[in-house]
Length: 324
Ligand code: ADP
Ligand code: NA
Figure 1 (tube, protein in one colour):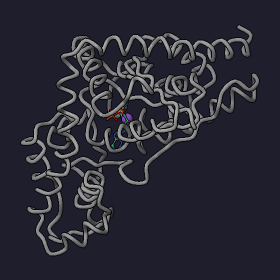
Figure 2 (spheres, helix red, strand yellow; figure 1 turned 180 degrees about the horizontal axis):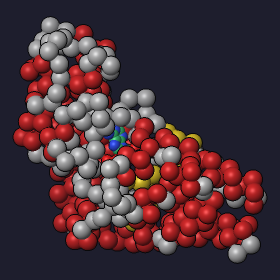
Figure 3 (cartoon, protein in one colour; figure 1 turned 180 degrees about the vertical axis):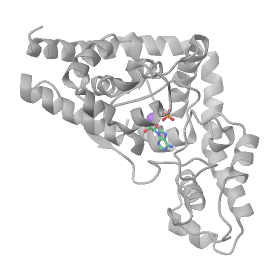
Figure 4 (spheres, protein in one colour; figure 1 turned 45 degrees about the vertical axis):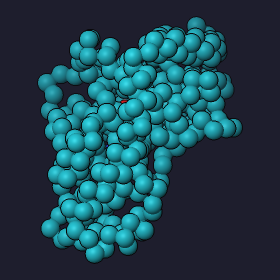
């Protein structure tokens, strides 16, 4: 049994990439593990957010977590800003971090590139993420490949703190799935699929209608070769669709390549879309029932209370170690 922690930002609706790369594993990891899942709203505000919009997204994300299969009887689900220990240990982690290592983070470089000014929070996002994880003495963190670097920093910060001030934090391991850790944009399959992509055709959102899903997959960028085989370098579009198809159908990529070797891209794409719809439509049905119910707030309040009890203990230990 392992202690698991992970989070998703309430920016827009989670994408198929968020689901296949991370959230689906949150659900399966509930078997036999102690899981804590967070709506990381304090991370979301490192870039400007519309207050009404983020409030709605927090509520929607909570309903989606449950609709995907997070069971509040077995796992803790809560909103980051409702447990003040995150910001408090986040500060301590900032003081343990070096400017240079934060400036070297790929996400910071990507998100600040070409901008006149960015918030200091964008730079100190990784120490806050470290705090999120370390507060719960987490052993395993299920994430997509894009978070690997932040997780390595989390490990470095935990080790640095423990070495300097005494053993306080468990050093966590990443859990990055072998397939699905990097679902690519449908429009530009050399870029990761992202919630914040301005080209709406590039991203499948988990609440997209059947019609939208079919349309987006039908217009996905492929190549002129007209052959269905797996080659991430030469055929990134087709390979991405094969990964999605495999994850959504439970059939291996090899099996799919054999089954579709004499078929055209049109038929292939229709079947990929159908497999995605089969995965997302039961989630959407549960989501629409949950979003109307008032049990959501209760679940989140209870989650915050349980999380607080655990987080407070680690925060106190870290302050004691620091002598503050
Ligand atoms: P985003 O990067 O889409 O804004 P978050 O930062 O909230 O989403 O990430 C939530 C989780 O989804 C993280 O574990 C992240 O690694 C994972 N993730 C994000 N994009 C993808 C993707 N394209 N493929 C696989 N996993 C992803
Ligand atoms: Na991300």
